[in-house]
Structure formats: structure tokens, C-alpha cells
Length: 212
Image (cartoon, rainbow, N blue to C red; front, side, top):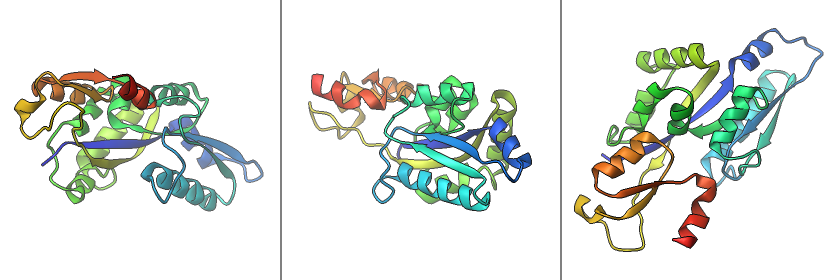
């Protein structure tokens, strides 16, 4: 069993209420932000966004138009969450741990390492529509933050890469500087493995790797 990364698709409750009661003649615009490129056939975030846009516009009969802002056009994940809360955007695709650290700490549970043995297990465990525990968590989050989690999606198994030496056992991590997301469980895991975690936003990752 390995560590997995997760992302959450979130919208504001104000948006959901508006869509429910909107007048037929008015068109509402939903601004949706994420940090990855819009490449639906190569990158899952782009695929999620494309399907979300197409289906919401179809199901609303054209009364909701979705504007997509990929590639961190509106800022990093923290900025997206802040814009969401301020009402400047209405939807976002962000890492579950980043959302947890800024908005709802109980969600950190999904970023604990070594919880799931496969994608299938993760999908079943994290489904907020069929798993009573996750449904309760999502409802509590909406009540306390005003932000609705639409879904929690696996984003791949974690791999440890570095330019110093092969990592074959936990002892090989001792003293290595390892980039992590700005997520508490990720940082604590690296500390427990005696590595030195360096929290860096995704938008600064390549520059940080180049400068060492």
C-alpha cells in the first residue's frame, strides 16, 4: 500500500442555490479554476473540467455557462480557494490537503499515507454519495465553510524522486530534501521518514528544482 494524492472539486453553496431558483431567461456564469493545463486527453484535471463544463451547460439547458481558467491563470491553489470564498469564482479543482489546511482540517484524513491498496478501494471509500462517513464529512464541510465538495478523486500514487541517491528503504531518505505539497500529512510523513520536507506550491516546483 502506498501514499496517494487526492483532489477535491468544490463549488460555493451560493452558486448551487442560485442555479436551483434561477429565472429561465437569465444566463449565469460559473468561473472554474485549476492549476494544470487544459489537456483533457493527457491530464485528468483537464478531463474533469471539460466534462463538468459540458454536462452542467447541457443539464441547465444553457442557463449556466462555465468559464474555464486552467494553468493557474487566476493563481495557485491557495489563491483559487481564496477567490472561491470571496465569490470571485464559483468552482475549483484543488488538492484535498490544501483545501483542508485552509478551510476544513477534518478533510486531512484522506491524505494520510498508506490508507488504500488500490484505486478501486480509494474510489469506494471516498465517494461522498454512497459512503455514509464521507457524506457526513461533506455535509459538515458545507455547513461550516459555505463550500460544497462535489467529489474527491484519486490523483495517482506518490513516488519519491531525488538527484542524490536511489531510495530503496526508508533509511535512504535520511537527510534528503524532499519537495512536498503544503499539506500537513505529507510534511509529517516525510519528517517521520527522517527526510527534510520542503513545502513548495506546484507553480514554483520547476524553478525550485532548477535552483536546487
